[in-house]
Length: 337
Ligand code: ADP
Image (cartoon, rainbow, N blue to C red; front, side, top):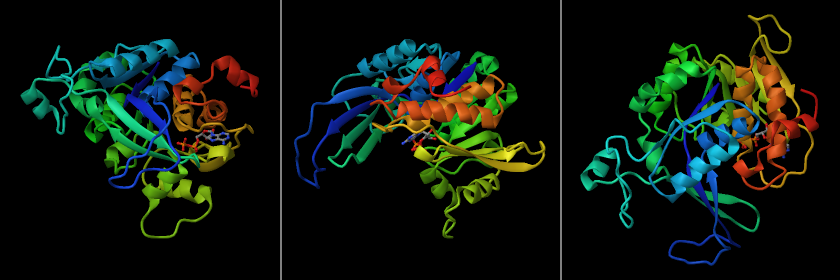
């Protein structure tokens, strides 16, 4: 099974000609609301492909939380790990009109649970987006929630992680995965410094170009060769590395890659099928969800990445994130497994 531990957000999207400056108001398009968040996206992508998938995440007791649960069910993912409300306040519900500015302590004081996480997204005429995320309930997914979800970790072959939930929860999940003999796939997004023991469990660490640059930024100019980034990222401690390269596919680096001996570090480029890109939102999440599932099925890292680039490529041919994710049949139609 694939266990995804991470975020679930409602993506609130408005198109506009140009963004307002401070104090300015502009008119935009009709509001469109999508299920999103890296954790929910990864779980939906894998489940849609036919993977037995569970999402461990936290949403608010509100309409967006119900929308996210419904999207997971529609994709075929298990929702036993989808926690609702705030942990130390069982049975609490949102009081409309109140705004939470702090953590669980304040919630307890006010007697309410945190709302579902929200991403406020504006897309301008050039197609560039600006995003404000309010983590809400995602910020209340705790190491205790990880401990309480023992059975989900026991059942998992692979545990997939991102950084839109508290870092201490990510660390607890990685350690629990290791304890239960599950493989850890981790996408450090948004980028943050990871504890050394957690980094050492990543197999692979999955980054896009932007994340690779941030992780490697030591004041030195970066080489233009992704092979060199991958080698430099491996030196930070993960067992293997995957760098996604958009339309150029992905790069794999680790022991045994490129038909090398199991103890030799190799790198391999995996090209993406050529497609007409319509909307790249959530492509990286589809890639990583597919990757985790294939690794759990016993694929080598290179084989899993060959499958994942096809899933990522299909995801960019349709608008939206979760709505754009392909079925296994569709993936089969774009190449041999
Ligand atoms: P992110 O979505 O995290 O920024 P990338 O842009 O590297 O990451 O995309 C992740 C994966 O999605 C790529 O490895 C590739 O498989 C697929 N992908 C993204 N953009 C395209 C594109 N224009 N054409 C084909 N595949 C793409």
